[in-house]
Amino acid sequence: MTWSTHTKYGINDWIGFSLVPLNEKSTYNTASGPAPVTPAINAAQIPIVMDPTDTDSAVKLLASSPPAYLELFNEPDYSFQNATPLTDPIPAAQDLQPIFAAKHPSTQYISPALANANSDWLPTFRDNCNNCFDQIDIISMHLYSSQPDQVLNLIKQLHGTWPDKRIWITELSPASSDCTLDSAGIVNWANTLIPQIIALGYVEKIFWNCGEHGQGLNGALDQYNPSLTNDDGSATDVLKGLAQICGITGNTTAS
Image (cartoon, rainbow, N blue to C red; front, side, top):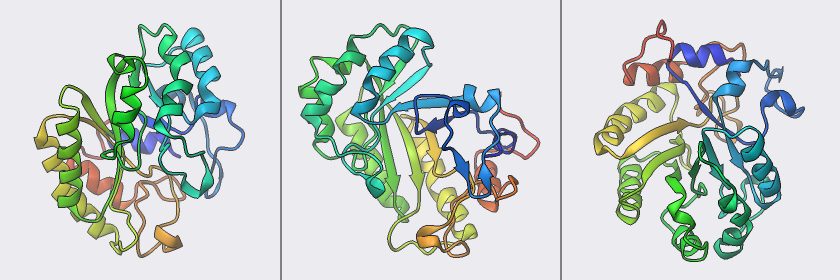
């Protein structure tokens, strides 16, 4: 990941699939090898309690170096490539109790980020977590669809369930099993969708997937690739297009 490229186009934070900074992870790699790690990348990382095995480490993090935000579990309702375990909502509510019991005056909690945010997983979790939702400031959702109307309807549905919570879309992409958009198509998709999301007034942050260079859907680089940077760290047409949609030029550094 070339962080300077991202910040040049207005990106100021990112969701990291880890509790620890990149320089403490030996397995973080890009397509061309180990990613260069800078203090700026680490400072911009929003950590995730990936699954129940991370709970104790998260409590220690809150005590020693509390982040501004902490996401609680990544897609417990869906194990992508078996990377994380499936976790039912009632056991998840119990697994996260040490985190809810921990003092965190400077850390805002983000709900478990679900693959299907409008299922009954999150309401069931809420009903079994001992009033923990008083401590959850933000509802997270992941959205993958090549149909802008479908994405908007899912967001509206989530807001209808949690009208008093802020919403973060912590993974957004047109990626889906039938998606065949090239770079221009992806930008057009975003140009149709993102202004409508902003106009809703209750989505606070949107995180694109993904920021670093990677393969497209089913490895088809020239057919579908949502990456924001090329293998050499330069901006892709997708990143340039997204920045333009958000009113940011390549000469604007995020504050």
